[in-house]
Amino acid sequence: MKKLFMELTSPSSNCGKIYEIEEILESVKSPFQQIDFYKTKDYGILFTLDNIVQLTEKEEFFYHEMIVHPAIQTHKNPQKVLIIGGGDCGTLTHVIKYPEIKHIDMVEIDKLVVELSKKYLPHLTKSLEDKRVTLYIEDGFKFLKNKKNEYDIIIIDSTDPDTIAKELFSGNFYKEVYDALADSGISVYQSEPPFHPLYDEMQINVYKILKSLYNHVNFVFFPEPMYPTGYFTTLIASKKYNPLEVNKEKIREKINNFNLNYYNEEIHFASLAIPEFMKKKLNIN
Image (cartoon, rainbow, N blue to C red; front, side, top):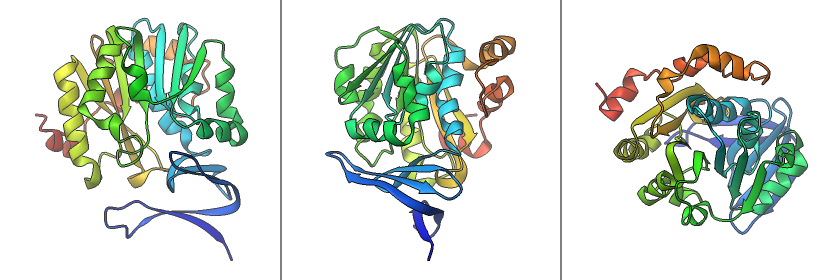
């Protein structure tokens, strides 16, 4: 009999995604959440938190490339970056590709996520060996309390709003992020599937909050087969720079040796195009 992992992803829980499992590599409860790593037949390592898919080896590049590169390419001179969450180090793996970045702080609340990712996702966690990286095991909200005008880019690589990341979707948190950014700073947030009613209210509220703080706020749209609906978003909020005004040639030059699988100069602009259903949801003319 086949061993299967199934995540129900529709609002009515009547459909989802199934992975055939070859082996349960790790199943442990941390002080914060249930952590599981599986070896799948077709998708490499499958990593879940509280039975919610965080990544598969085969498909993680869509998300990690798109939460990092559009924002860094938008900023004119990123020197210091903060990542909140992202204990699997997929996001960090792409941030360290930029030699102009001088310092990277990563704040992950659950030490066990990092430790187990080192064991099962070493191709991602080797990024922690970069000398520019400092890892903090603590609450991201608390970490930001004393940070003012410090970072050029802050990336919020959190889990879903109804998990331990709940505080990272609050209005107070967005203001803390804003205050921690330099005058030309950019923040990036994972913002869930765009065409999924469970997240409509959250996306509307977050968009309004960010629009009240920043000069430029853009949803980024991209495929992500490992997440509900196969279609996902991040939000870029920029104090100064417009992601739609980035020079295509400069993007091509910077990423030429990055060996990326999805992001490129054409995708940068295409991903910022807003579907009609999203315009209606956000009341954008």
